[in-house]
Amino acid sequence: MKRILLWLSFLSLLASCHKNDIAVINDPAKKPNVSPVPAGFIQKILLEQFTSANCGVCIAADTLRDYLVAAYPDRFYPVVFHVNDILADTTTTNPLTGINRVDSSLTPSGADPSGMITRQAAGLADLSPANWSSRTAAVYGYIPNCGVAIDATINRGIYQDVEVHVGFSGDMPGDYRLHVYLIRSITQSSDSAYDQYNDFSMYGPSPDSTSSLYNLPYKINRYKHKYAVVRVMTEHGIDGDPIPVSLAHSGGEYIKTYTLSASLVDPQNLYVIAFVDKYATTADGHRMENVQKVLLGEAKDWN
Image (cartoon, rainbow, N blue to C red; front, side):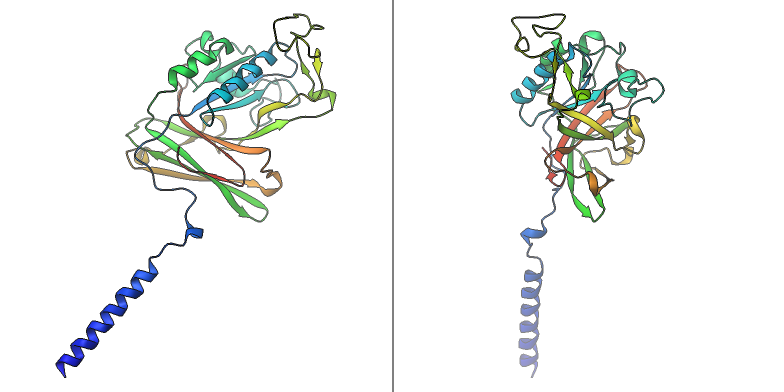
């Protein structure tokens, strides 16, 4: 009798093991869009550009920016703040003065065209488009202590959630902030309010026969304005949302969700830029640690 009971117990245990084996089989369809925090990250590069459709010399900076996007595929991410034109973002523009708050707080001159590579601007030279290439090459080989992943696939009917993950491969003590921008890939319109001035045209005030812009009109209708900031999504605006110090250590992860109206979702033309910045109260104290980009409706894993 004991032998029979032992045999039945063994069969029961065997069946239980098989049941457990079946229960832990992963369904590929349910695989999370963001994987666990990896051991290391690739450095990606952020350009925050300041321009205006009414600025005739700014168009040359657009040409250089597009060259860098092509030279560093999926590593160089520009965002463009328009100043004093129809594309100016209302969430970062002072309604009384028309001054862009990001521009005025991070760039000492306020002159356009200008832009910061990884938010490092010790002086005016660092803001000049002429130095964007060298500044990009200088930071390209950095090994960052953090990375960003974004899941922008979460649709809740009239709302679209954007889940931003910040992972750490090393300790990062200090005041670090998460910044999230909604970007429009291309804005193009036959409305003359969107015309881009071109001083380098043969018809412009500073014609340059050596420039690729020379044969274009002085006012370019249906110009492709790229990477324009639509809005700042972070709760604390341009200051960014604080990352808890308790999570900023090797293997740590900070997750924050931002919500948009689903009516804004245009997977072909809108995307999200999220980056981590070392916060500072002076223009030369900031440092962008890493950045990620994804189309709305899609997900982008680490690296």
